[in-house]
Figure 1 (tube, rainbow, N blue to C red):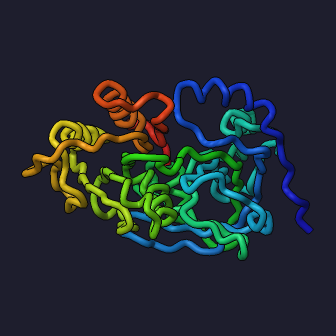
Figure 2 (figure 1 turned 90 degrees about the horizontal axis):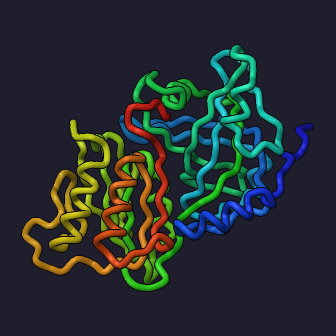
Figure 3 (figure 1 turned 45 degrees about the horizontal axis):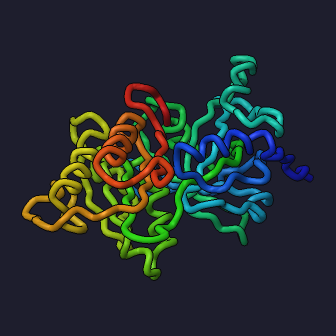
Length: 305
């Protein structure tokens, strides 16, 4: 019988969270951060470059996400090697596994929960693949039912708009979280308040196209990650933007409407692009640091998946 997962209190994070909250919008921290041992039960190609991997464990029946953009650390074993996990009380798992012997040292990558089915003890994770260029992509291409991985609970950053319009900005790595947000908003008055901009390397990275919120799609092509996304948002702030533009269309073309008076924002994706958009919003809108949540999911030039 598998023992229940051990937990760690969030006491050590409380002070840091209070300080962090002075500089950025944040979601409430967890009371406990559980380390799960999960089993792969399915691996489905849901788009030409996206794998949706289902992970299962009894402990996921009582797992409670703190937000629709729930993120976590996924602990991936070396190929052909049994899964080695850090101590359950460890908070920074990526740092902890650096001390493991090289032949068993797992890789650690962060992902978001695409869907959670507590009744079945399952979650789905979407992984954008690019061959063997990164450990996460290589794992996603080879994962088979019965394979084991570890999951260390994380947190979330999204908050529903309390009033006024809300800006969402994402790239292909943050699209699963944005799609989950859109599903949560579907059928509510808040959905009409949300304006999203999504940059993808190509439409082959798009597994879901949410219809409950307005989205402007930007295809990156050979441009630097985040640049076209920031440009599209800058244009929208300056000239207004047509809602729900087709992939590759530039926002603002043919529009004379005033830019939305955003009252909150959620920005996730490539770190440099996210930082640029955050600066843009803080200097050209009435948004404050506490009304903008931003998180760099990856950094251009570094293997992250």
